[in-house]
Length: 113
Image (cartoon, rainbow, N blue to C red):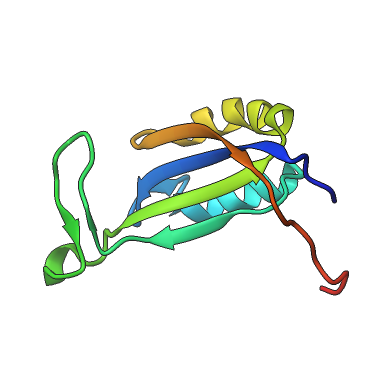
């Protein structure tokens, strides 16, 4: 797969405890991105954060450490990201989704699985 040098970065901010039909939302998003043919997705776990409801999510407080902030990043061509957005919107109940233009410098793999 080849990515254009000008692409979009889709960034999704959710919580570790967020669910979709009983399963982890971040897993459901990554699997849907793969089914949609997107170039790849990465899930990053945050140590501390808060969102629109101002609830602190941190690894420092034992009772909250199960619901850490997560960020999912996906980079692909603008038309592929735009086509994925309605699917994503249907999956997310609470969270933040951002888009920004990025310049792809290198995207390659060795051909093996």
